[in-house]
Length: 201
Image 1 (cartoon, rainbow, N blue to C red):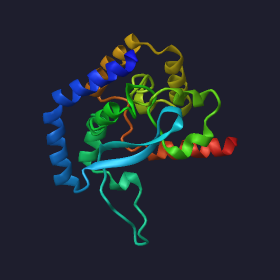
Image 2 (spheres, rainbow, N blue to C red; image 1 turned 120 degrees about the vertical axis):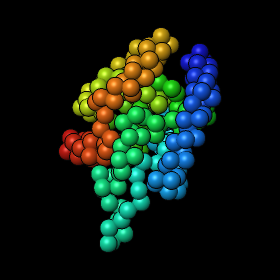
Image 3 (cartoon, rainbow, N blue to C red; image 1 turned 45 degrees about the vertical axis):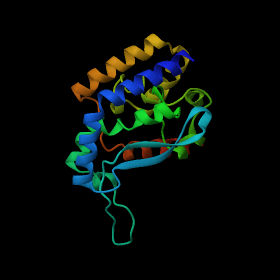
């Protein structure tokens, strides 16, 4: 209950404080990438229950001659890379926090299709609400291996405290300003996880 109260306060404060930034980013996304401004995707929430996670759009709609979307690396623009490297694309996620779909701090929600590939230990990441940021993100962000990231998620679940959440939030702000350890086109990493876990099955 204390964590939920903290989430509501932090998300409300963040949305109010950053509202000018959110409006400017929304305008630039509309101008540079077109509509829709918001990207929605189904992700697993608490206990694996699906929810619609929202972010700012970072890629163009571009298709090959067969109508199939081009790879992410070909659809993302320099502006989209900037949004991802600064985490500005994550700001709408504060609305997910207010709704109760997410927490400010927790394991980052991956894709629904990976639910069957977690080990029993790794599946513990779904016993808490997913987060806008998390322990894995301040321990190397996307530059860490998949196994390391999932291990950090489980470590967070087992050791979470309000003080740890506060430390992760401040570390996140620091890393965003550093803009280090970020992979702005992570689809290849997602595919690698799928391939590795399918092979293990």
